[in-house]
Length: 117
Image (cartoon, rainbow, N blue to C red; front, side, top):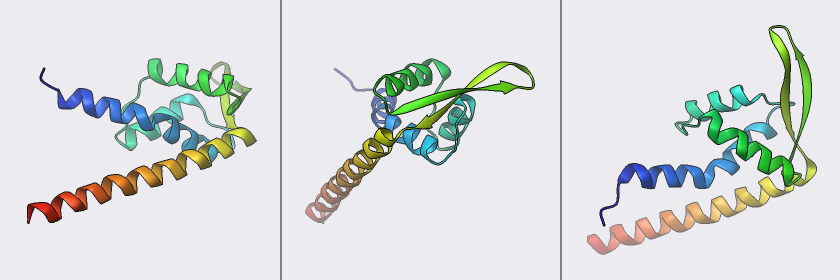
């Protein structure tokens, strides 16, 4: 079976999406989903609303996020997300895990380079 690089890239992005979304929201007083998508696209983590909204709902159901409704000048009220205390703790754990994983991957790459020499 032939692996497609685009499928692997997509899976890698999905694997870090929670970390990235929680990080973005943690830096804002309140984050609007369209702004989150924009920031993810700027970071080359292509995300569409159909991917983001289920993730936001899962994070809210896990008590990692909360939301408030704010009036909009151009239409109905908008839902803005905030990270909870539990979400901050979870994000800290995710960052630690990411650092460990990143270190392990870099270490394996360095070991591979020294073997090839």
